[in-house]
Image (cartoon, rainbow, N blue to C red; front, side, top):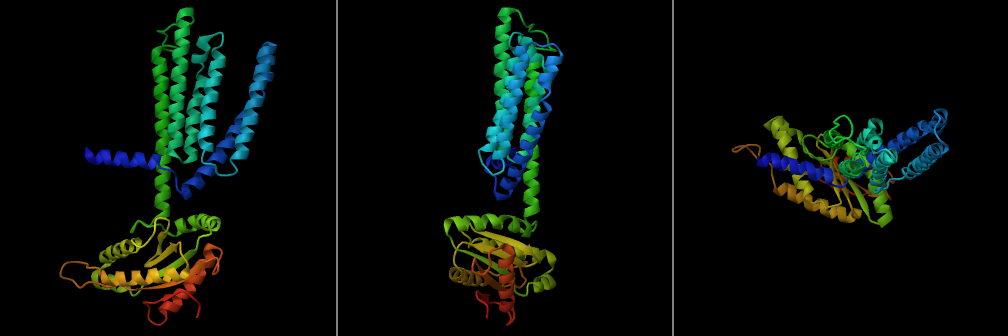
Length: 376
């Protein structure tokens, strides 16, 4: 029971946590897609005034349809323009607009005929569409917000219309196919189900992104994650004027662990090394495993300070040998590393990795266990 509660709590915390850089990029592209879909829907609604005129509607209703379509189109264009840049508040604002627009349509339909506002399944179903579109934002908070807003707005609308119609005799409370209490509860339940589905999709997307961006053995970020994150790291360093050093690190003669103790011991040894290296990182620094026994560190300090920190790490790693099994010999590890300072040694990820790789080869050439920060 406690384990289930812990897993549920972890899932809820992950859903409510602000998204990282990768998920923010995914959310921004999703917001642009939603903006295009919203604009397409408003374009499809443009013939409504003509259809109203053809059906013999009065001038007042024709003008209302025309004004509503023009307003919806203008706001959709505004959302599309704003979505061109990542804005943390935009998904919440557009989600609130989508849900509130559905409520506004139901209110208009209910003017003069309360049953029409609650019987219109076609209009009400756009609640589900609005909630479903939140999944494209890749943010569980947006899905929960839109679902809660739809629940509150529809429940308030149904209560208000039912109460007003009860005195006017416009609704029959027992009519379960239309405005009855059972129908209201069913629709509220469907909103809850749609919200839960959107949240589940978001969580699945987060899980897939985490798996695709992390190494399954050590749990560290991988090369794909590194390449996606580095542009944000450069932008942050540029804006703050901070120093940045990329470290390409290779464990010396690691193959002997697999040869002498077996591949399972090799896997545990890699986790031991990754854990030891992670301890030296500051909160805003990163460690990634990019393959085999190669790692990349992104340190927010000048190359000279990075060299000193790595030299301390080298001594720490040597002082913490890995013991495969009780009674077996322990393995003391050393490493070789090449450093590249941004932007002096490279202004891009590929440039820094190329420079660091060249210096790593220089460090390994005499036998390893060296750190090279400059070209020979």
